[in-house]
Image (cartoon, rainbow, N blue to C red; front, side, top):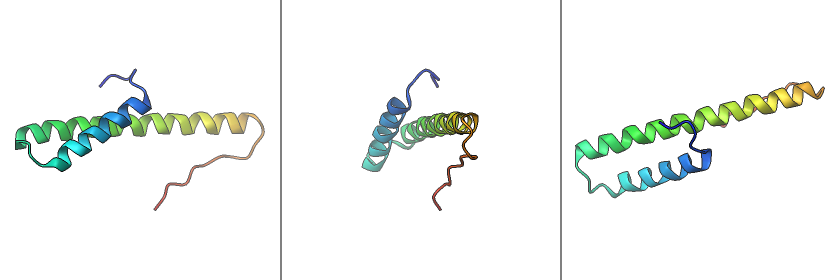
Length: 74
């Protein structure tokens, strides 16, 4: 997976994969390959979000703000 891809590009590709899989008219082998790519895009997006969270935390704590933690939705 190309780490230079932007978050927005990865999300767009992931959305296309979801639509394609939801259509359901694809052979199993192709569906598995598409699903695998979707997992890679999902991981890339998660990693980019985690990195952004770490940067925000650093910025806020370096400026004397209290610790900044994002709470995940349950």
